[in-house]
Every structure is written in C-alpha cells, then in structure tokens.
Amino acid sequence: MDIKVIAGDITRIETGAVIVNYFEGMERLDGDIAAVDKALAGAISQLISQGEIKGKLNEVTIVHSLGRLPPARVVVAGLGKQHELSQDRVRGVVAETCRFLRQKGVASIATVAQGAGVAGITPELAAQAVTEGALLGIYSFRRHITKEAEYGEINQLAIVIADEANLSSLVAGYRKGRILAEAANLARDMANEPANCMTPTHMAEMAAKLAETCGLELNVLEPEQMREQGMGALLGVAQGSRQPPKFITLRYKGTDSTGIDVALVGKGVTFDSGGISIKPSEGMGEMKGDMAGGAAVMAAISAIAQLKPRLNVMAIIPATENLLGENALKPGDILTALDGKTIEIISTDAEGRLILADALAYAKKLGARFMIDVATLTGACRVALGDICSGAFSNNQELVDKVIAAGAEAGELIWQMPMYDRYKEQNKSEVADIKNTGGKYGGAITAAQFLAEFVGDTPWVHLDIAGTSLSEKEQNYLVKGATGVPVRTLINLVLSFAR
Image 1: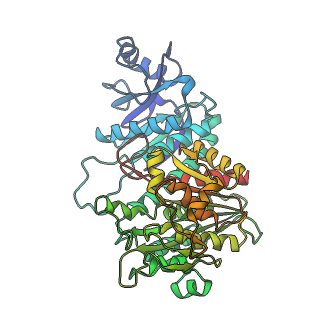
Image 2 (image 1 turned 180 degrees about the vertical axis):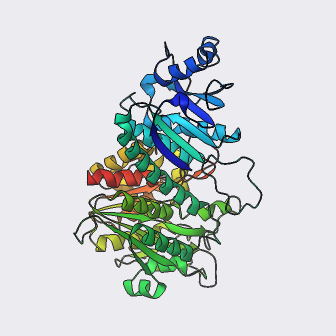
Image 3 (image 1 turned 90 degrees about the vertical axis):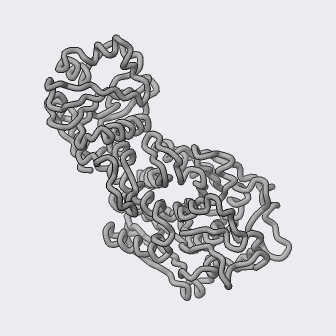
C-alpha cells in the first residue's frame, strides 16, 4: 500500500472514499466532520439525529456523496467515548474501516489524522496509529493460493491534515508506523509459511536477506560448530530430523562499543511434532508456527536497524525441527547444555526450553546486559491467559515493568506471572542437574524457571506467546493466522532503552 501524508482540505481530495470520525455522545460537529457534513448538505447530521450514527467504537457508516464531493463515499467511523480514546483504539478503528472499504471495492482512501488532539494523542502518534492500523488490518497471506482474491486491494492511503505546520510530525509518525507494521507483517509471513517452506535453512536464508537489506551482521553456526561450542541441548532436539539445525545471530551496532546492550532470543522450532512424546494429530498443523518467537526477534531487529537507536542489539535464533526419527531424542536421555549443565529429558515435547537454554547461555557468555526471550513455549500459558495476554516471567522487576509498558504502547497485552523459588522444586532431577519438565501443574512457570537456570543474574524477561501468536478470527488489526506478537513490543522496548 502506498501511504502519503498531505496538508489540505479533506473535502477536496480526489480518492475513492474519505474517512472522518464521530465520538459517542458528541454534542456538535466540528473540524473535518463538520466541513464534510456541510458539503453533503447535512446528511451526516441527519443520520445522527435519526440515531443511525451513534459513534460507538468501530461503528462504520457509509454515506454516498452523490457528486457533492470528489470521493463517491464518505465513511463515518465511530471512535467510542472521547475520554476512553487511545492509540490502540485508533489502530483498531482504522483496520476495521479499511477492511470494510476493501470489501466494497474501494482502491484508494483518504483519512483525517484520527484521534489527533484528543486524549494526549499528538499528530505524530495519530499518523503512526493510522499507518499501523491500515497495514496490519488489511494484511493477508496468499502466497500459496492460486485462486484470485474475492476482493481487490487498497492501493493508496492519504493521511490528510489541514494545518501544514504539523506536516513534518505526521511524516515522522507515518514513517515509524510503517516500519513497525511491516516488521510485524514480516513475522506474520514467516509464521504463516508451511513447515516445508520455512525450515531452519529457510530461516537462515531470511536472516541473510535481512542482514543485507538492513545492514546487520550475520553469523550462522552449523552443527559441527555447535558441537564445538557445546550446544548439546539444541543438537539433542535436532537429531531426529534430516533438516540440519541453524544457530542464527543478527547484530545491530548503534554505538562504537563492542558490548551487547540487549539480546533478543527467539525460539525457532520450525515444526514441532512433539518428537517421541508425540502430540495429538488434531491441531498439529499449527505447529508450523512454533518458530513465531524466532520470527519475532528477526523482524524486530530489522526494524531496529532502520530506526537506528544508539545502542547495540543482538537477535539470537536457535532453529530446528522436532521430529521422530531413528536418532530422535528419547525420554530418559541426558543432554549437556552450552554452560555445562546436564538436563534429564522427561518429555521430548518440552523441546523449546532446551534450545533456548543454549541460546540464553550463549547470550550470557557474550555478556549481554539485558535478555528478553520470546517463545511459543507452553500450552499451560495458553490455558492460563487465553489468546488475550502474553505471559511475562522475570528475575528483574524494573525490566519486566519496561517490557509491559512497551507492550501497552503497542497494544500487545502482557501479564506478569509469578516466579517463586518453590516452583524450582518441580524441576529437580535425581540423575542430572535439572529435568526438562516439572510436571502437570504450573507448567508455564516451571518452564520459565528452567530457562532462568541459564541466565544467572543477568536481567531477563521470558515472554510466553503460546496463546497470542495466533488469532482464530479477524478482530481490530489482528487477522486470522499469525499475529506478529510481540514484534512491536520489542521495538518499543529497545527504543525506550535508547531514550
């Protein structure tokens, strides 16, 4: 979609449809909607007085201009109650409206800077929210569909502001919004790919493209190099597959320092059958998305490189399949992780924490100041929080507060889960340093406690996105399929560190 920011009169824009806003309980029309209503000979006012337009959140009313305006259609989009407005509500309204207009065959849209001047939303933040909402809301994954789409695409979006003095702010907001939304859509693309098209090798190839495009440093360790490093946990998971594992790192340098300020670690299991502890067949196809964490950190660092904050960031992605094979990992086996800890295998379906153990130990070895890992780690977290919130687990309250705040800014909800020491008891092994599952109860917490063994005192947050990585329906700017969570959270977090 081609998006541009222009200063001008919304009633004179040549486009397929114009979007203006109305708040619930609004006493009188003013600004852009008043100008449009006047051009339409009071049609909007009449619909309001008749109760057809109420301004409720996500309410969409279409008014045909009948030649009174250059665009054939005017859309009045409800923003709900004015005091409840937020950037995230603007994103959702824009997404819903764009999808509505796409179904009507509209190819070009002009919109006001929705929400600007209300509830602390600056013109810059409004432009960012409009851009994110449009790009996230009309996303679709059709790479493997040969049939022509039922609806055409929206090719152009103009964000229009009357005051030329605010134009540069809108341009800055649009640019940031575009970078964030395109990064989230990149992660969606990767997680939506079938597992035969997104193998560990394909992930490494994607990393190479991002490195070239965004100016990142790339390093990919092959199995022999992993053995030299002592990555026994990752290699143990990989040994049941014919696909060679890849240990991928992407590095962004925003300062002259050689240190790593933030390490973003993402689980990259490109297909998870459960291994010998095999999963039920129902829903197993969703396990192509078990690399959503790896996709998220790759997409996030690509955006970070474009935004150029002054700090150093590394993305670490251990990538492998978890399959059954003659060499597959078995319950009862013992693996040795990169830091020398031994791990008793209770379930081969608790593989994500194994590959993350080596990745977190690697980040710690490199001296990362802060670590955030992202993983579709446990069904237990999905049971606890559903598909609304990601679970956050941490050894540092200040850091987890920053992560939750970055998520709130992105509209990606995060809920902190407990990390009491008593949960560690469930991970104790009689034959090794630790076992890879703590049993039926508190599974998301015991998984996080397992990961905590490999970070030491380094400030760290684990984000379990098992519930939020996938959406089963269209809602606001989420569409059916991969969500791209928590790409925008990670970007916001890194930018907050830089500030």
